[in-house]
Length: 315
Ligand code: ATP
Ligand code: MG
Image 1 (cartoon, rainbow, N blue to C red):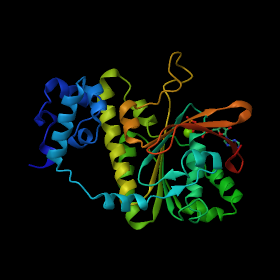
Image 2 (image 1 turned 120 degrees about the horizontal axis):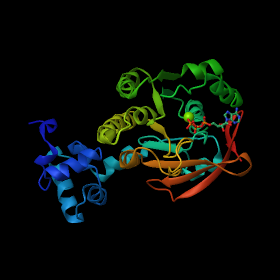
Image 3 (image 1 turned 180 degrees about the vertical axis):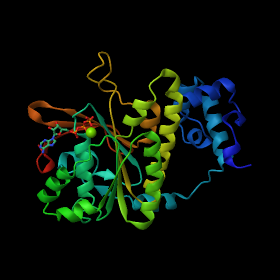
Image 4 (image 1 turned 90 degrees about the horizontal axis):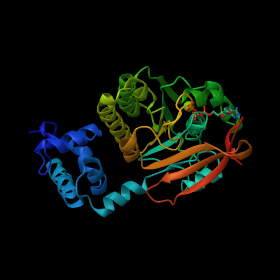
């Protein structure tokens, strides 16, 4: 029996009700359960800590998730690289820049600068190592038709880079709907075989999903698909030592009176899959503020920077 044949209900401690709650929250396969914390599982499925831990252990056993030595782990992490986001404050907040081997999420209101950061990283990753880059190419999945070659030109020129070559090294695809977006992430795996990709940008991760799955009854399906999409992206990050950068909107929008402007779309699923999360907002006097909300090893904090003609700059 392959792991695909094993249902949530086959796990010890998971009854029909618990399975339904888990699926509704987007945890629809063993891997998603195996990688949860007992606290998260308890919250999602309304279970106690002990029972949650037992279910997680069961999922791990079914998947035969083996141990690797601390040394293997250390060796892989040692290969982790960083891409400069353009402003030294922002890089310091991130402990040097945006990490490879994981997903970094930038979320915030419209106009908070998410797309500008996606563009800046697409330029910077091409710079030599030691100058904030990795000398590698970019895959840019553009879901809102907001990729602007002119901005790449501005930023590349500002760094004294060859504009045409910089544009050439960004492999852009427009995603027309969420299925197309997921397909592009699958195809990115092929591109990663033939090109040396160091950064994958998905701008925006959630907009298409949010537009398509509007009803309350569709939420579970949306979350499942988002989870699958992010698993694909994470696999790319790990197997190619690449950075994955996703952007995400917040609950509030101009037509909605009561949204929370600090709460990201996608709930548990997006938060859980993003190792590093930054909340972007406008600050005083045209300045920009990034707040580090989640990081595997850096403390929470804020960085102030500017968006200028030449790109993301120190304030
Ligand atoms: P959305 O949620 O709508 O996608 P976003 O967070 O992606 O929004 P961006 O498009 O990244 O927002 O940011 C737009 C902001 O960047 C605007 O405030 C704009 O003033 C600023 N900006 C864009 N180009 C320049 C430039 N050349 N010089 C200065 N600021 C710029
Ligand atoms: Mg944008």
